[in-house]
Image (cartoon, rainbow, N blue to C red; front, side, top):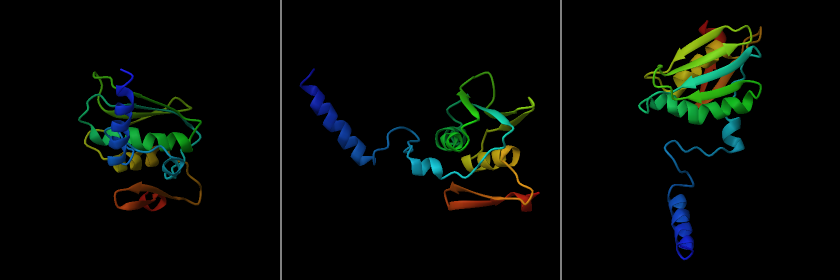
Length: 150
């Protein structure tokens, strides 16, 4: 078995070089640059965010969980994040506030950018002068001016 270890190691390195070091379905390098790319700061009243992805067919919800949730966690360390795969419930993101109020976002048939827009509308920090939030999407940075949308 010891003779095969260097062989397996070389094969793994070759595989990683072919795939640019990314392994897995939605492999994203968790670098500081990736984590800092998200500029969404949640309101101080947000206590917890729970995401349930019951079926593997929920591609948008899975991508949001693996790509955007780590970014949100990095920018908002005071918020508790958790995920589950409860088959008896639908795909949803549940946001709980300090006053025990809950907001629910249904994730079925939504892209990660659409989910992020709903999170921003429901839970992003606001100022009296309004704000503009930038977050990455396929086309580059998407500008979301929330004061103009209301």
